[in-house]
Length: 381
Image (cartoon, rainbow, N blue to C red):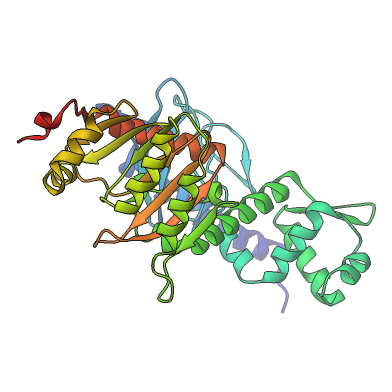
């Protein structure tokens, strides 16, 4: 049975009236929660966000639960933390007046826009991890845009799978189609680059797990990216001395004027290797912990007195234990990881410039906090 015009008009008015009532109630709740307008509130030196702003954000992103750290970009570089009960946003623009999907936030904000950190959101990362084919397709399009038929021939995918994945990537704005040819958008290229870097970093961490595992903390750990072409020697059950043997062999091959060294242990093998350098005229700066320096003196006072008095050696004592081995030559670095018993479990050798710079900074931090030993008397408590 169809409705008359007057009946349809009455039904429409009733629907509109219901919507108006809902909007009024919503505005009333927003006003009670946070006052008028989307705004940031400054309290002391910390920025927080009004409840009304949170309401607006929740409308845009009604999924998952996460805490995001946002940064106010402007004259004040202040971090603010907002707990979203139901948010999965990667990029949040407030006060810019830009479109976000089909919705638009109020532009009347007196503070700069807020941007959340992170290239890949949880949703994007999950989208990629759910299907290796998507990752393979993105990596392929990064270097070889093409038609579905060509892509199918070049990749081990069915035509149906290629079409489906291209459609999904296109919906996300990562892929675009021009004259029948699919290619990455700028966003797609950045997503692909960041994801590949992320996987590469994980791969490096896993490859050097035996080394990282024995380092005292992340401050003593180099960036995994710098280890991509480094040599890693690990102790094994069949060759537990492999890292030490590699270290001694490498040090004996140094042809440099100066060597700088942090050592968490006393080792006759290390001593002999560096003594060979001293004979060739290489100057060595050595930093030991207070306890280790005193121990060295107790073991052999005469030899220690002789070493301290020699010109090729500058000995420093640091007040705290040293949890990493470090030897710096001329743009050459050796890093040793030790277990709780003082055994070298892994040795990394590299000439990577950023790794060398990191190692130099770490060494200088220890040395500047140390006291130079002028004679054996300086080692007495």
